[in-house]
Figure (cartoon, rainbow, N blue to C red):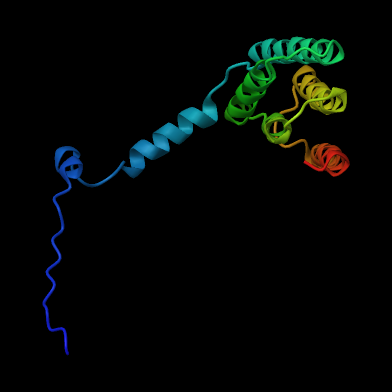
Length: 164
C-alpha cells in the first residue's frame, strides 16, 4: 500500500518580527558603542575592594561555622565572587575575571564545605586582593597564566582528595 498523501506545511506568522521589523543594528551604531566601551574610564577598584572585603568576611564566617559545626550561607561567598567575575572584564581586569570564574566554579562544585575548601577559596581571595591592590589590568601575562593554572591545580587536588 503506497501512501500518496500530500503534506502542506504552514509557517505561522512571526508576530514579534512584524511588530519590530527586520534589519539589525547599523554598523555605525555598533562602532560608536565600541568606541564608548574602549574609552570608558572608571576606577573599578573601590567597588572591587568592597567586594573583596565582603568575600573575606564571608569566608571567615564560614570557617567559624565549620569549626563550630553550624550551617552557613554559602551565597554570602558566592555573591561577591559573581560580581567580581561579571564586572572584571568590563573594566579591563581580565585576570580578575579569570580568578573569580575559577573560584565560582569551585564553589558551585563543592557539595560539603570543609576548612580545606575554604582555604582554597581564601587562596582565590588573596589573588583577587593582589590584582586589585596592584591594579593589574589585562590577563596578567605569563605570571597571570601561571596563577590561573595553579588555582586550577589546587581545585583539582581538592576534588581528587574528596572525590566529588
